[in-house]
Amino acid sequence: MRKYLLLLIILSLIFCKGENASDQSQNAKLKENQHEEHEELNVSLEKQKQWGIEVGEVSEINISSKINLLGVISLNQNKTAHISSLVEGKVVSLLTDLGDKVRKGQTLLVLNSPEFSQTKAEFFKSKTNLNLRRKEFERSKVLFEQKAIEKKEFLRREAEYSKTIIQYDVAKSNLHSLGFLPSHIESLIKKYESLSGNSDSLELNDPYLSIISPLSGKIIFRDAIIGECIEPDKMLFKVSDLSSLWALLDAYEKDLPFIKKDSMVRIKSTLYPDKEFEGKITYISDMIDEKLRTAKIRVEVNNKDNLLKPNMFILGTIENKNKRERFLNVPGEAVQNLNGKKVVFLQEEKETFAPQEVKIKGKIDGNVIIAEGLKLGQEIVVKGAFYLKAELNKKSFGGAHVH
Image (cartoon, rainbow, N blue to C red):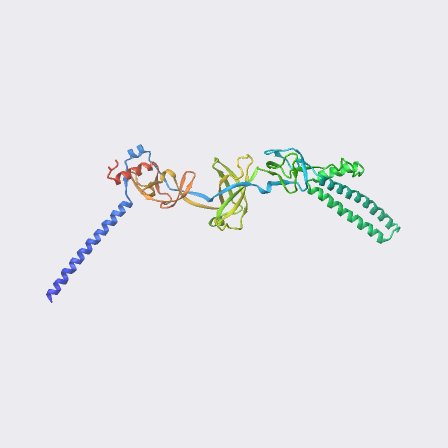
């Protein structure tokens, strides 16, 4: 029995000794890892001055929510016109060319169109009938009041007058649809009245139709030559006001909740890296592209200097002024690449520095936004951090200690 008891005591002592040795080994490894993660550099004040090392506090920056979107410049479709003729005709004169600036109501070309002459003749005919029926109706009113005609006859003449008013309005509308502005029609009526309603006059029934611009802008397309016979609906010109363009941006689904119509938008082009163009969101698509998983954002951009061109690639930055966040902020020079990680150097004492791994959220105005790894007010190296990184690399290869 004593023999077994003595054997048990010996085994217990051996086991405890082994366990203590194992614990000591694990603690040593832990301390070693902690030392590797928190390796320090001792740099004298003189050396710091030589390397230009400066220390500053981790600060906080208040920035708005920003989303960068790629896109392309497009014509402002609300300020662009496709111009054609609604009647057949032959081009007799061209008054404008590609690149010309035109004003609203300006004549672009002139057609010889018998169909237009016929439309004018119908207008003069309706005008003549209107004048005649108006006189008959006014006379019938007097006769009816004098009981010279029956009510039935008065109502018949009133209906005839109303009918001619409708016919006149239709004829006037037909002229307007051919490009005649109200002012042009008024001038035509004055000329008609000055000739005593002579609708057979050659001066009134000339076949020359002016094709005019419905808006002010620049001619960016022309497809017409003198002597060409024009068919209805053929596009002859495209005129656009290029002082206002659209930026069509592609927004991913995840970004849509943060994009509002009152958001500020800044447009940049690689052609003008130092210039920004302000814009306003006018439309957010209700549809998601099933392949790209993006939605179109339409931004109206001021292009008064005519620098932006349609089909130009651009970058749009959408800023939500109502949503502002605070982030830790350090100078870009403070962040260094060390062994595949982003680090800054903390000042632990006047001559003692240690690397601290950080996670980067982004960059703004030359500074780096820190997501993790630092606290507000911590003292870090803001200038000269490169020398500390180089010295740390030297130490890892058995280099000398800095003094």
